[in-house]
Image (tube, rainbow, N blue to C red):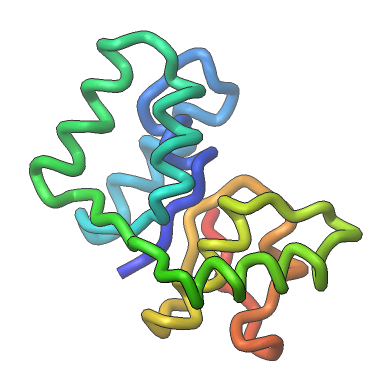
Length: 132
């Protein structure tokens, strides 16, 4: 199981995104299920904008392809802490909640084009396995 960042969720659906084809290629080579944080879903739905594109993402959830990690209150506090630690990148809440999800779920792989994930550390020590 891998985590999926907003840019991957959007890129796999929107042909307007420069890395759309790469997202499709990657999606064909990985297990058919992945996890995103709720904050990433919110960002992705906003960025997709139009209902037909949003519907494609909704279908992924309904079919169980995309699972959602729901952060707890403690997870939110940890995300805020990570935003402070990695403020030099800068780190937004969606990225921080993915780091927290990785810590809680013991997942190191992430689908993203966001180079910040090369700097982030799971439990402050373990680097992400960034794909692509």
